[in-house]
Each structure stands twice: as C-alpha cells, then as structure tokens.
Image (cartoon, rainbow over all chains, first blue to last red; front, side, top):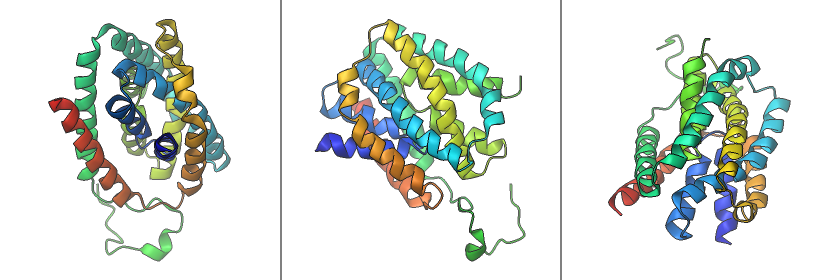
Length: 136
Length: 113
C-alpha cells in the first residue's frame, strides 16, 4: 500500500521534472532501511520507464525543446559519468549528508519561490494586474 | 558549446545523487527561453538521457536492485500518466511550496540523524 502511494507520487512529480526522485530516495532510506547508494540506484532504474512514458506524452504534446536538449547533451553525458563515478568513491555516510544538503537547498528554494505567470495556454482568463510589465 | 556547462552541472548532480537533475534543469531551461511547461517536459527528456548513462555506470558497480525498483514501477507509471496529462493544467505553486516544506523537513532530519 505504502509502495503504491510512494510510487504514484514519485511518478507524478518525476513526470514533470519536479524532483519526484527525492520522495522515493527519502522513503527508501528513512523507512525501508535502504542504503543511500542502493536507494539512488533504485531511483535511477525506477525513473527510466516512468520518464519514457512521460516523454512520449510530452513529445506528442509538442512540449519538448529538442534543440535545447541537444545543446545540453554532450556536457550532460560527461557530467553524468563523472557524477556517477564520484558517488561510487564517496563513503555512504558522507553521500547521505551531501544529499541532505542538496535536499535542503531545493526544499528552501521551493518553499520561498515566487508565483510565476501561470503555465497554461489559456492565459487570457487570468490576466494579472501587471499586464504590461514584462518584468525581469 | 553553448549550454555545455549547464548540461555538465545537471549531469553531475543527477549522477552523484541518482536524482534531482530535473530540478536543476528546469530553471536553466526557463532562462533559455522555455515556457514553464516546455521546461518541465524538456527536462524529462534530458534527464532520461542522463539516467541511461548513470544506470549503466551504477550497473558496472553492482549497485542496481531491479526487484526493488520493479515494486514501484507500475504505480509510478500511473503517476507519470497522471502528471503528464495534467502538466498543461496544474497550478503548481501551492504544490511546490508544500513539497518544498516536506523535503526541507526530511533534509533537516537527515542532517541531524
């Protein structure tokens, strides 16, 4: 039952790139006595089919900026190799503390994030007071 | 070489922590001119690619537990379909704040334990 809930909400957030993996890793390490490294491995495996499903739907909706993804690809792959190797070198306890700091930074950023203009294509019905102010 | 270093940063963090590349990629993609929806969707494409690389390297070191992952995947798939269907409609702000608060609490607990 718990696995169903954890899996579902991880899937929802992961399909949007909102940090779903954090739920799964936190749950595995806090409540299912999984080592940090093993939990990270589970999340990566979990993410692949989940992302594939979401990706197919996002592609169909024409939401993927392919040119931008391509521009990031080479650096991304090199970074992924270095990061993965790095995680294998670092001791599990230290990795967990670093992960906690990463979570803390993310959690605080999300808590205090300002509302952005809504992410929808029917913006017409929610025109804000700042109509002309293209701020930033 | 535009976006090379942004890509490297996402890749490194996603590989190191086995998660979280998306939360770095989304703001970068928005800064590159994507709409929020487009940034979220594109980050999934990008992180999928990074996770393939990471999975291969985790696999070499024997750190992959397929059984454990499998017990979550059907539920996760249902969540992914739900999430992808509602990406166009969702009002993410309150969700983000709530999720941020939960994650912050978890982080503090981890740091103190």
